[in-house]
Image 1 (cartoon, rainbow, N blue to C red):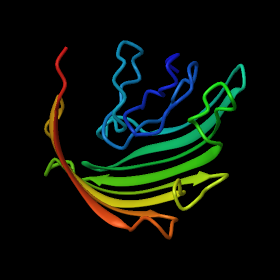
Image 2 (cartoon, rainbow, N blue to C red):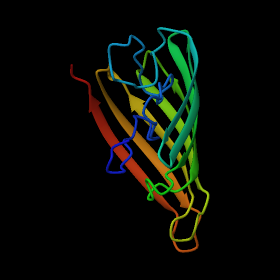
Image 3 (cartoon, rainbow, N blue to C red):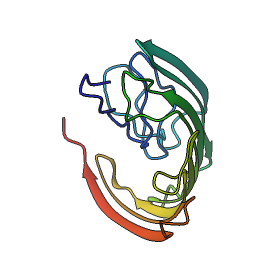
Length: 185
């Protein structure tokens, strides 16, 4: 956590407290060698992995508790990858902008090895303990596809998300995200 109260995000969009050793990451690429800060979420069919992560961080009045499970399983040239992350945060008076909340994210993908294509489905639910119409809990449901034209070194991702705030004041909306990633080291 930066001392300005801004929580850095991981590759999968959920912030992790300092000291949390994330055994699983976003369905997209992963490095378990200990030589890289890169967490991408799949081994691309090179390993059979089932892992779990857990972490707790407490500083002054702030508390963060997180846990996750990750599976990456080759099926011939293809790979099934999935993860579930649950996090509870309470910023207390120390980080007043971080409302008490529980965030849940589940994601699954099927990488078609020979085509270098990976369809992905994802659901995220941010459950604020004191949700209001102005600052509501929010549900996100998404689908997407990744084209791994150079494996983890370069890829293109296209995602569609349906976003539903639990509010009478805010409307549901759709979001489309197109991005490319280059990993240079």
